[in-house]
Every structure is written in structure tokens, then in C-alpha cells.
Amino acid sequence: MAPAISRFTHFLDSPLGTVQLTGTQEFLFSCSFTEMEPETETDPAPQALLQAATQLNEYFAGIRLTFDLPLQPQGTAFQQQVWHALQEIPAGRTDHYLNLAKRMGNAKAVRAVGVANGANPWLLVVPCHRIIGASGDLVGYAGGLWRKKWLLDHEAKLAGVYQTSLF
Image (cartoon, rainbow, N blue to C red; front, top):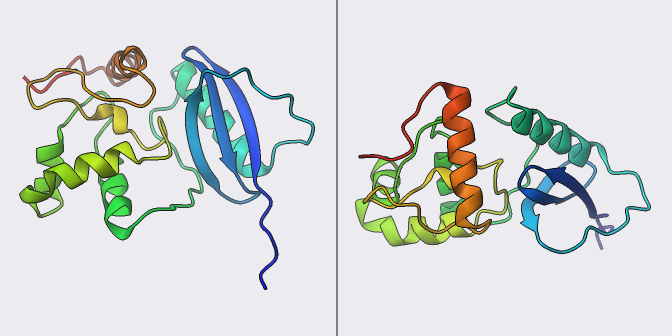
């Protein structure tokens, strides 16, 4: 029987509210916004979560646009393929599900791409917020559309690209 893996939680204040990071000593399992009051942390956060917190602080401070973190994907092979494709969308740019499905080689998988995007456990780090509606409208974001708009505006300003829609 394999030994139990210790999971940790760390909270980070951000301009968009509290970010909850979960993971192990080595990997980040999830990064999400939480409306709950952060728990008091009794144990020091492990290196993987401290590294994520540092990079997120740099992102919010405007000195980082991409993340280099040890992620531990916990999804299907297809979901992992979608999450990888999301990371290829440059900061300051947006895209939509159909284009993502086409780049993955299957335009008919557009709905499955949307479902996998919605299952992304690393809001911010794996930039699912860069996906907008084909019409150019802001649609669906687990962190809320107001956060999605803020993130897109923040990245466009930092990247020097002021295109936050496809049209």
C-alpha cells in the first residue's frame, strides 16, 4: 500500500480576492478564487505552493505574464491536451473554443473542448480566461466574468496588446 500523500492549502490575497492554492510538497494541484474566509494556516506552506504564490504575486504586480510551475494534471488525456493548448494562447490575446478545437485537429470536438476548459483546475496559471465567445463576448469563467475582464485587461496592458476580442 502506497503511503498517503500530504496535501496542503495556501491562501493568497490578490487584487481579485483570495486565491486558494492546493498541492503537495512538489506539485500544484489547483489554483482557484474563493469567496470563503481563508483558513488560518498552521503549517508552513510547501515549496510548490510558495513558488506558485510568488509567481502569482509577480503576475499581479505586472512583472510576469507566464508561469513556470510544477503542475500535477488530474484529468483525462483529452483534458490535459486542452489545458496544454490553453497555455499556447499568448498573454494579451484571446481565442474561442472552435479555434482551439481546430488547432487540436478536431473541429467537431468544440463542445468537449469547452467542457475540458471548464474543468481546468488552475485558473490564472493555465489561462482559460483567454477563451471568449466566437462573437467576441466574455463568456463563462469559474472566477466570475468581472475577474475575467480584469485579467484580460491586465494582460493586454502588460503585453502592449490591446486586443481583448477576436473581432
